[in-house]
Length: 123
Image 1 (cartoon, rainbow, N blue to C red):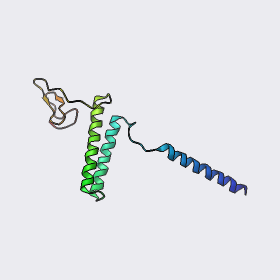
Image 2 (spheres, rainbow, N blue to C red):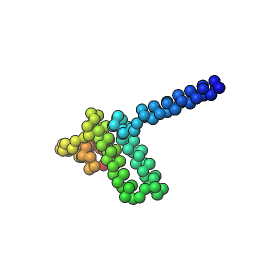
Image 3 (spheres, rainbow, N blue to C red):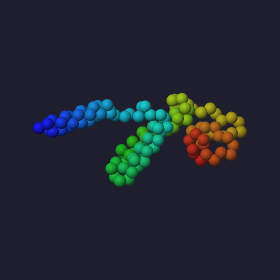
Image 4 (spheres, helix red, strand yellow):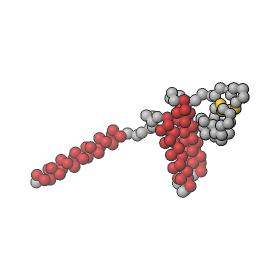
């Protein structure tokens, strides 16, 4: 009889622990993540999205809508990480005489660079 009481108390304690953990867990919106972590998470989500689309789990309309949203998120986080101050990058200044600018992001390029240091695009 005493064994059943102890077993019941242990099960009750376990159930209370699981319920409290569920309440404290909540949904992670990603707001607390650093910019580079949000960028990496969006890129990983894009990879998962591609797999789900190729396996037929998503229609093309769903795929395009979600992909556009994830790409925007990744680019905004990349720009925020590049500035290092929590704000997305502003429109770039015009390139000084004798230098060029990246076609994609407008970053000023020094002579002899093969790739844009901001977005990685080949120049």
